[in-house]
Image 1 (cartoon, helix red, strand yellow):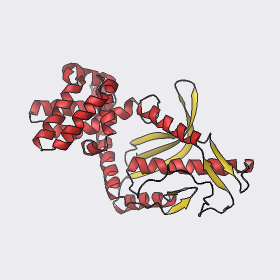
Image 2 (cartoon, helix red, strand yellow; image 1 turned 45 degrees about the vertical axis):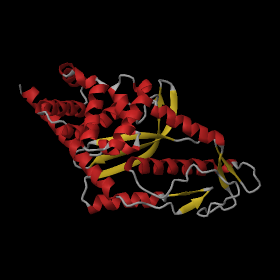
Image 3 (cartoon, rainbow, N blue to C red; image 1 turned 135 degrees about the horizontal axis):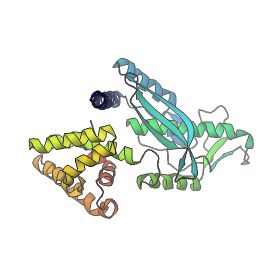
Image 4 (cartoon, rainbow, N blue to C red; image 1 turned 60 degrees about the horizontal axis):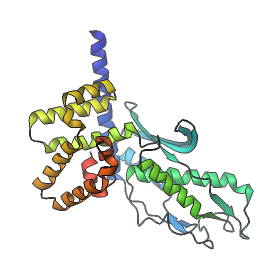
Length: 314
């Protein structure tokens, strides 16, 4: 009995730790100031990585948040054999130790560094790798924290004669060729299609689903239904497949895309969000062949539609 009680207490502690972490992360995101892309070089404008880190730390200190984060280059093995170099970003609670970690691929294979005569300089490989790591560290923070800026020009065409105005080596320049852009796009598509065990995986889809449930439970009127959704949220927080399976057996409708779609449609109608209703119905029509009967895929794909961000905001 004591062991069962202790396990239950640990479960509750884990749930509370996650709730506090989510709350602190929301405060951080809501209070981050937009950071302009005030650095210019290699054909595009970009945000200063140090300014981003400084702004994050300032918000954490100002609001007394129990948060910290770390980033470092490492590697992961995907599909059992392919080694992929990544930047690993981890945000964690300094109070409970709860953490959220994800990987961002480092794509350096097709970067070339040319000197002013157009010849490749092999002595600049460390600088190339260092610059690439910094780029993807910056990219990960901006994407994860929804840091605002002016119009994105990172993918703009590269002008080979464009000097890096912030570089100590103005006679040299980085050229990102079309092959690298193709690799980046292919990698993004792989992530979106749930083919890589990076950030987008089962646990990440659970997180997206859970965030949506925190919002949608307030859109149902029946107490029993709301109670069952709360039980599902707790099961998703625990990360225990047995507990989750038990909830789904008792409430088989939770495994139905149509059930959750009905709640969303009723909310859109009730709140007169007719534009969202139209876009949602179009989403279901266009994406049904992809998410099919999978509730997790349904919500993960819906999360990619920016007009529905409020469904997943805590």
